[in-house]
Image (cartoon, rainbow, N blue to C red; front, side, top):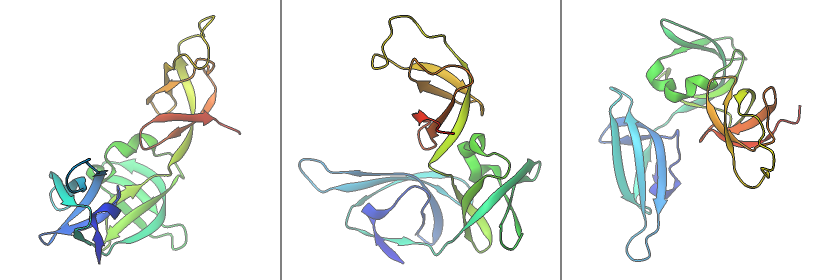
Length: 188
């Protein structure tokens, strides 16, 4: 299926020169002078090689037919990461190069979207927001206002996140999984 380059998003699977690529990042640039372009960083599925490509935003790009389904994360072992389709209980094993940096977010029972091409998982899409607990952070400094600055904190999955000064150890917060940024204090 042909789509215009400006509609390509992270996680999409596209076909270039009869090879499948999963999109890692996609940015649209609109210079003041000249033609708007879409810069795409992608990974070739067959061998894991990373490639950068630039197209005019109106150029046609072939988007591969990929089946996207929701799967539940079960466990990780020497073979890879195991997921189960909740309705059919069918299991699929995903290699570490497909999971990539997303593995720090995976929790038992977590629901994710997997893109499958010919019954092989080729990309993973996490929930955009996730609730985690602060395990380590600096104490509040007196006189520091909430708007002045953020402080570093370590969360339950080992990530480092910049949080407002009023957040302390044990507080549950919501983070954005795309850029590890603080969104808000958890409401639960």
